Image (cartoon, rainbow, N blue to C red; front, side):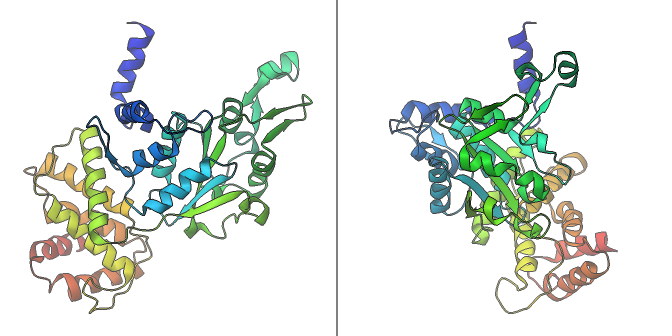
Length: 370
């Protein structure tokens, strides 16, 4: 087997292909149809990048599937930001598709979404700037050959888009190492008396969870270097149902799960439960509810339905039923065993029990809650 054949085999087996691989045919079709001006080193024009994210149909009949369901203007502002010299910060509560949008933006703009720094409490400065190959360093001293570039350094050199996930989880002193990169577009290497200057096309997309406020707040100096776009939760139940059903279908196909022909009933039920508990009021506005401690995000709804689909496929008749999603909903709602269980039991008895067509769901939830 040749190297190319081995790589192809690995790609086929990838559990979760990168965006530029999973949607390569759409990106290729967009590039062929795109006759609008493109910023330096961009694979597509800003219009085509927005179309890739929001979906549409091309003159040749190619259908571009929506990657993000939300306000078009937010996507246009995000894409336009990347075409300037300001970095982009995607802010929102957990589960609002910040990482998903970040990945697809990088894939459409640069054709590569893998220049990624994952923010954690232990992220070192080397992950943002550069590190050293210590064997080379000890043998030959400081040199460019001994230097290990960070994803940001590579993006600067190649005019690409770098991504930083969970920026507010990174320690404050490491965050501040971004200031010179974002403002001067320069990365000094004092050990060598050199610097790396960003070439045209370089930019940064960062994501941050606004529930993490106070973990490692961004300094005012760093925040000024970003244009912030807040990604909201889906505005309507129908929009959220659409998002969940699309993602469940994509994930199910990647896991070889059979499609659930009657799954929309349970998807809509999961979304309804999550939205009511999240908003603290029933859909009809008649009953006030207590909200649990968890976020009950769209991403969690996708996880609950996907797990239910797997249960139905492997331990049921393939049809998604109330019993397949009940345990997942319980796990998502009851994060604090004491306080959240009270909230859940009250919701079951005052809302679910009395709702027409929800008797099977009520019984399934009572069974897993016992």
